[in-house]
Length: 360
Image 1 (cartoon, rainbow, N blue to C red):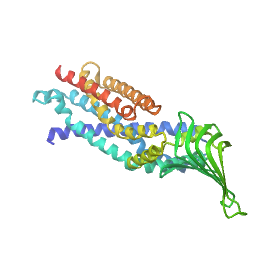
Image 2 (image 1 turned 180 degrees about the vertical axis):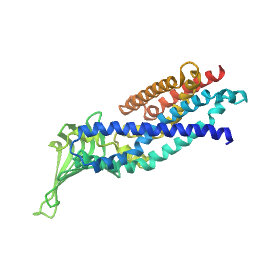
Image 3 (image 1 turned 30 degrees about the horizontal axis):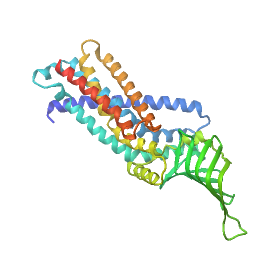
Image 4 (image 1 turned 90 degrees about the vertical axis):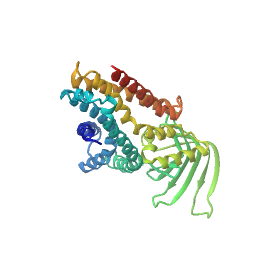
């Protein structure tokens, strides 16, 4: 990189870091206030631990926003000092001027993918443990994903599920283990499918195995349909089962394969898998969207008008992105298309607008 490139990249880095710190602080502050109002009598150390574990995820979520603000403020600063005109006069195009900033964003996208795959799952496990044990004070809702199952503990019952379908309020591959006060296994219930209606669960095609001290062999009986009452509401169970957040890309791919081979519904997990890749490029799409507006309106509205327009574009992108993921989760869009279509659409729009500004 020559001196001009380093100067432009330095401007972008300064505004990017400043914007990231501001947005992370605002997000954590607002979230902390709302949580403290909802959950009373929580120790300060619990809140401190929870938000320390939350910081990497918040940074991960705010990088696209900080990227577009870094682009907008850097280009606006160049324009205010007439440096943008000077760069044009020496033959540098808009593409060339933005190149060091875009290369910086591409590097950030790589870091985003690495953080989402290697760092966030471990922090998410620790954050969830603190939330359900120390803040919500309901340890039974804390779930662990091991092999191809999601594990829960509810008082004297430990149970696991292969998949949990929030849309249809059903689960597949349920196994419940009942223990006595000495934690000796007393009974095991398994079911192929489960209909979740609040605390009332209807099990289908399963078996009940009873372990007694009087017999050396467990007694097993099969059933077609069986109703049980659980301590957990199915809504609470669904809210704690975000499998993708605690698995790396490799682990999630293996989880999807095992469940798909077993004939289970994996659409939601496939959407999560592809979205981990697509979200890592959201910063680049946001940065591209910021370029034409920060240059095109530099003389008629000022920096704050540019920021306002770009924030509106960010809001539009998030609505489109989250709506597409929701349609994918409900099976209305193919998982790959649901995760990538918004980025291709907005990225194409950004390139079109940049070409128009460059040609003007």
